[in-house]
Image 1: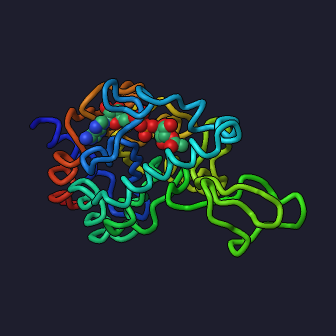
Image 2: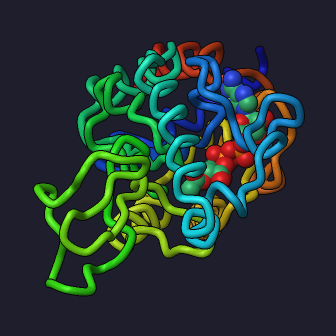
Length: 254
Ligand code: OAD
């Protein structure tokens, strides 16, 4: 594959310094682990479900049980899933070149972490974590000990609800994660973008930021994305197929 050679050349030219390679992943990264994407026409979650109902604070407040149950089902899917060959290729690469790769993910599953990339920057939170819906009106904060079982679990003291620890539409990204991701995008020499439609900001904007600072951009995606124009190379294929081929034999400075 001609693109494969050119993409490897970009990774090699990026060099060995810490943060030389920034990897940005999206839902397509976990598709071959059996976790559905959001915007794929037939299989994406947002083709079957309304994000305004299921991924917004208003939707949760309107139907807390429905939303809690939907996330409970997704959590089960994440717990059942295993990292695929793409997650493993990224983790092996990070082990081989400590510090060289900074991994930024939009994914709320834990498959990068379970593959061994413990330090992945999580822009959109963690679906397996809970957090309180609001600051406790009666005290400074509800504690884990206050949670009573329910759908959703609630605070025995004030009725506050637990919600999944993901970023919903209309919410800010975790500031420290976003700042770390911006720094990584602006200081890398190469950016590898895997399995994202590029439809959701500010995550999608990281690619343009890297490009503006002179980084070379490689996209891995079986279908067109909204950020293909930013790429030096677009590799049409899946994460599990292409990442092992791209990363396993790439030695900086070869
Ligand atoms: P999308 O569902 O928008 O896009 C998934 C992308 O993955 C598409 O471009 C697919 O072509 C591609 N894809 C599908 N299978 C693939 C595979 N096996 N290998 C590689 N790529 C594949 O998902 P995201 O771009 O991640 O927000 O969506 C961004 C955010 O929108 C998500 O983080 C989520 C959603 O609302 C939150 O959960 C907060």
